Image (cartoon, rainbow, N blue to C red; front, side, top):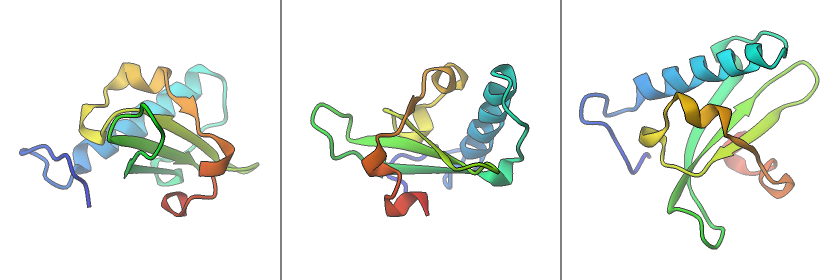
Length: 101
């Protein structure tokens, strides 16, 4: 269940699609192999780290080698294209988190 919703997109379908497209573009700019939107999972979860916003967005990219995990310290609906360029790799303890499965 998403806590933050866009009244014009209550299921956040459009923003998740945009995040996936921006992630694909970001990978291409960094010379990484091409992937499809189906290889990307986007989840908004409650952040448990001190000093963190109440919610963060986690992105999992399935690749042929191994999955890549990233965190953006914002709720899903507040993410815009420039945020993708600044996303941080997820800490190792989060990569096994159930939201990534």
